[in-house]
Each structure stands twice: as structure tokens, then as C-alpha cells.
Image 1 (cartoon, rainbow, N blue to C red):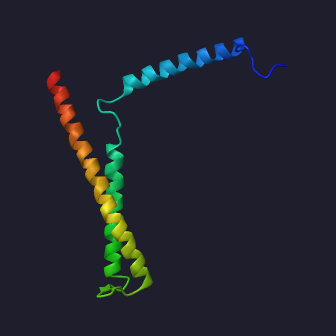
Image 2 (cartoon, rainbow, N blue to C red):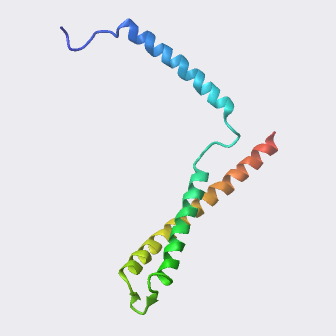
Image 3 (cartoon, rainbow, N blue to C red):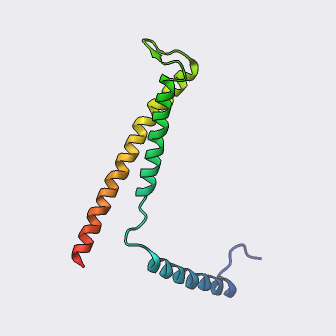
Length: 119
């Protein structure tokens, strides 16, 4: 019995062609149902950036109020240090995520306006 087949069995080719026709019809349906703007991740960037910023602000607020505040040498408690670390990581990262999402949103708006002018 050979380990490598010389040609594909007939049932495999028929099966693949059926899948190809189904895939083509699904792609055509999806193309018809798409909105004018493709989902390029703008919404996800804005949402994740907002939540990351919110977590950073909450951690900074908790460091100042609930976890003992921040003195000359840093927070007074271990949980204060942990919250400060979370705040110092979340605030810049969330800001950059939100900034990227806002830039993409502005770009999409200008592309949409340019597309509407062409029509």
C-alpha cells in the first residue's frame, strides 16, 4: 500500500467543490449585508481605551482615598503601591489606545465624507 496517493479520490474533489460554492454564496451574502464602513477595529480601540483609562483613574483615586494616600516616599500601604502600579500602567496605555481609536474614527469620517462627495 503506497503512503502517498497519486491523485485525490473523487469524493474529496466533489466535497471540496461543494464547500467552495457554499463559501462563495456566503461571501456574496456578507458583501451585500455590509454597511458602508467596514469593521476596522475603531470601535474596539475606543471601547478598550475608555475602559483602560477608567480602570487607571479608579486605581489612582483608590490610591489617594481608600488605600492611605501617597506621601513623600510613595503610598502608605501595600495595596496603595499595587493600585499605583495599576494606575501608572493603565493611564498611558489607555490614553494611547483611545488616541489611536479617535484618530481612526476621524479618518473614517473623512473617508466617508469623500465617498459621499463622489456619489
